Image (cartoon, rainbow over all chains, first blue to last red; front, side):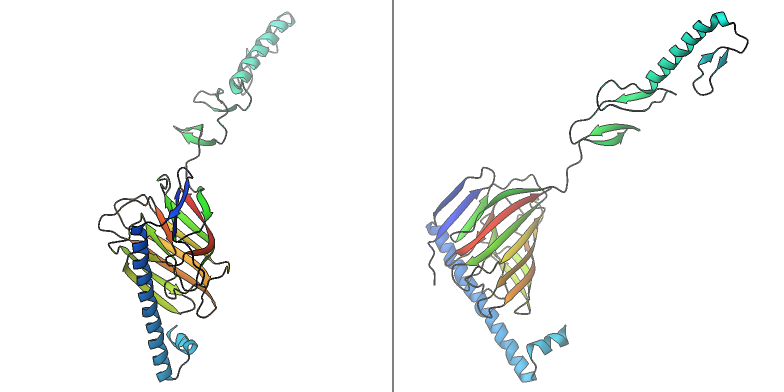
Length: 71
Length: 251
């Protein structure tokens, strides 16, 4: 996995001034919150996909067949 | 004395004496000159004429400024600057680097904003990309729904603390797969209503290695509505692997 330094680019659209700096403590804390939230949503999406597959298996349908019926 | 049919210029009668011919011709010529000038009052390159309220007398309209268009005001033609509208202006462009790109001090002189991301991808598989408005990361003011072609889901999101632009999958691949995204923020200067955002994006997923196309609609609806002055493009975790952004203002 490629590791990227936690940096923030700030672009002043009015003046065109561009600053790249290391993320501050507050921003790093927010990133951790975001990563946790993203992970939770990812787990939730995966759980939904698993549930969906279980139902399809019970019904003996493929995802394409289910989509055809529901579409 | 006889006169011409249209302009009433005086001409000699059939019975007029030859000795009066010079004076008659001079009178006729003078009348023709006067009428012609009244019909053609132009003096300068680009002048045009239009009929005035007086019969057989036109009004001179001097050439307008560059870019002007001919329109009507008070029942007569006038040159005027075209009304604004429809124009699109590039406000900012650059590369997607680090974990966040914050576009600040966005001009309030436009109707809508359009943000385009080209060739974006995360520095590691399965890092989601998200957007925030005005750096607001609390309050859970972001709502949305995304239709996702690969996961075949309609993902309803919110309230959340950011707009998740690849929701429904959240697993973009760590490769330059010519991913693209375009977002339109409507009425972004309005400080009294919620902000609406259209999102369309395509990327390759790391889980199925398939190209995914997504379409979403989002709203930013804080308790106290605000104008958008800043956009935050986020790739939390390991950050952006590459890509570029372009922000446009639309009149």
